[in-house]
Amino acid sequence: MYIDSHCHINFPELAARMPEILAKMDENKVTHALCVSVDLPDFPSVLALAEQYPHIYASVGVHPDYEDTPEPSVAQLVELARHPKVIAIGETGLDYYRLEGDLEWQRERFRTHIRASRETRKPLIIHTRAASADTIRIMREEGAGVADGGVAGVMHCFTESLEVAEAAIEMGFYISFSGIVTFKSAKDLQAVARAVPMDRILVETDSPYLAPVPYRGRVNEPGYVAHVAEFIATLKDLPLREVAQRTTDNFFNLFQHAKA
Image (cartoon, rainbow, N blue to C red):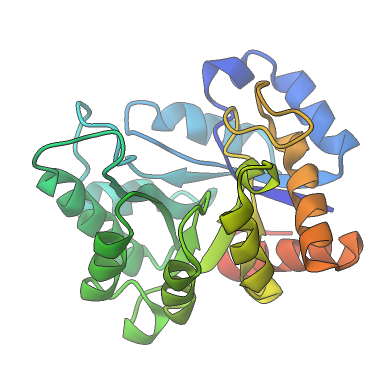
């Protein structure tokens, strides 16, 4: 069985097709999915799916790309995360690729989420793009790592270097690979995936984006996460059954508020 550790099935492209989306998950042995929050106004739609379907979980957080949106406070995130189906804080982090100028607000927002994670004891879902040095620095400064009293989390849709992966793993984080790892152009990322230990790997779709080969260019969905796992099994020369089981175990080891 497989778990999609990061998707956005509340987005319009997927929400309108929910029966089909769930049926495709079942067909492809995808037993659970984590629907990830990107801002507070849309959080109710994320939570509604988690409340409606036992095998869907939710996170609460504000994505670093969302500049013109209500800014969360630690207290607000903590309160929203009290819901038993909310198993993570995020997605949060830094993105210097899409936005320019003074991005101190991004860094402060990231710190807010780390503090909420420490208080709730729920793991972080971290997005980082063109900002890895600051991401790792703030994680260390705010004590996101297990050794510093944090509960760690996952570096989602990972596309950074092995050095960044190792720095995150040292803090107790997991590394999640999306459909990007299946792209022919992703040779550097594939080398990272070979090097990351299986006990630190998760798989995800980030749907509706980044559909893996052979669906690249189409709308992505949780059922396609099996193709990410298949590709990693080939990369690491491991039986698919082992990759499926290990990534499933890793999900529940990290997100301990989720139930198998």
